[in-house]
Length: 513
Image 1 (cartoon, rainbow, N blue to C red):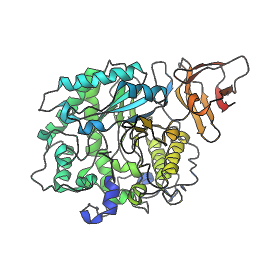
Image 2 (image 1 turned 45 degrees about the vertical axis):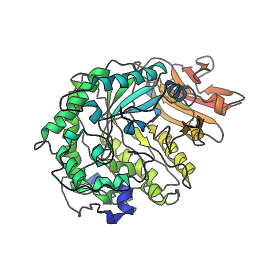
Image 3 (image 1 turned 90 degrees about the horizontal axis):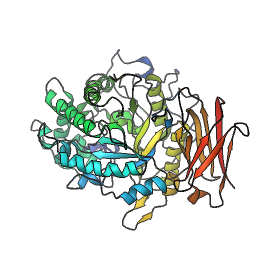
Image 4 (image 1 turned 120 degrees about the vertical axis):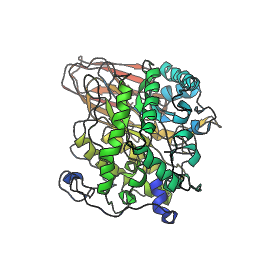
């Protein structure tokens, strides 16, 4: 979502600056909305309290979690980052160097990168794909491949297009019907300008403006065709933070926890789902193997429930669709501080994702989360998000590695303090099904429990930041019987590799000496 230093997200901006003209839809009713997730605070267990206490996150028994897997069938746990500098670059390319990529892998233990791609750079004229732009992407993908980092290509938009302040669609794909637009001082408030709302409404209206989505899908087909064989590419994020246009309902993120209206759910189930299936079909026409990441409406970032139905993945074998919601706290951004006793965002977000997991057998990636590290409570907020991700077994990508929110200062060539929270011991590849893992920074203790899974081969690999947290070394123990398991440590890449026994359940523990 970020633009520059990011500022308020659209929902926070709407709630804080109500006079700007944000739309708030009147309540509606629709019997087609499922009773268990009907836009109220009722959850699948019948409770009318949708949100957990923020200072005592306890998800209870979680549904079985599917994971993105590698070629050996191992579960991939993705910890990563991204770079938004390409938004303002004339060539629409990030200000990355190969040294940055090496640092991500070897110093910080990151195994994932969300690479921003822009439709206006990819297809500057209708039906014309800019091959030079693809060449620039490929040159950077080669760096990630050389350092063992998985890349997700993200078709990025903020406020639809550059004309409206930010990035996304080419000029020829803007259909605002002459509605007015006045540039707002807070970037995200531009979402509520009539021209932007109309541009999104026309994009989603396939029957009336089908060429827009057809071009978008064809651009994705060209992108997937070019990079389907690149060793760095893990998959494709089909659209950054989709905005529903006039279907937006600001009540979704009110502090009292009001849910979405029936019209919001209807948008998800009809126009939005149909868009995804069109694009998925075009990607699958040229690439049947890579993972396809789908984001919910951007109100998911604050914890709102989403209603995207099961999507068809036209490939042989199990679906490779991944749910990729973002997480940003409205209260944190609006108040410019964090109080875990008052801010329900993290627990609310986790509960909504749990509800959605009951509906879909999809792996989950938190495609964006971040915070301004200068705000009071920033350290507690970051700890709470990362602890929740570990407890619920969710992969993530921090926004961003550089910039004002970043954990790296490219001018000074130095780390910022919150890098010590982002860098942590975690399982990167698990030869089975992970059921729990945890990292305690205070005691420098890591634990992983996983179950054996049929057909999975290879070693379990754990990133262990030895140089940062274990100056005197560390010990590795296992629940497996002595003599039935072993481990090695790759000092250059700070990675422990485990060969487990034939037992069904394995628990690995790492402690300081």
